[in-house]
Image 1 (cartoon, one colour):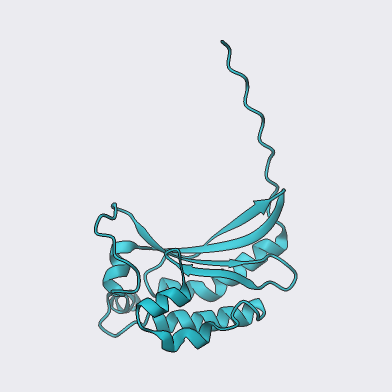
Image 2 (image 1 turned 90 degrees about the vertical axis):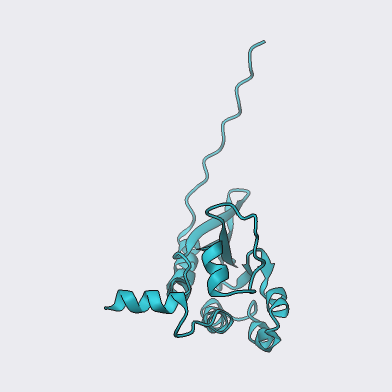
Length: 167
């Protein structure tokens, strides 16, 4: 019996300039903070529904083993993690004329839950209203927040590596 041909997939149009600009703004503000903490630079992606870009997503990835050694207890350590497993920080925003953050999570958990697990409830007020302020203000607050959650000490591997590269 002959197989029926698959229906052709409609090509996805390129993201509009405003969606690309939102991704660029997120990366410009957060890349320096995240790379200093062992993450790769942000990778921008777009959620598409009905042919329209509905979401801009930036994902920062760090080696799970490396992240767990630098920041013990911040995320659940997986003893069975496969080689190459990573810890992700995901930042999403709506690609509209006045963009706002819509979701922020670390390894699939919302930040509030992460803070409660690591007993850093003192940082919770920094998250309040983050989704309600314009993108640049939210990114500034998020950068300070991430810096406080993932503090780099003078003897941390990240700090030592960065010092080595400065010479």
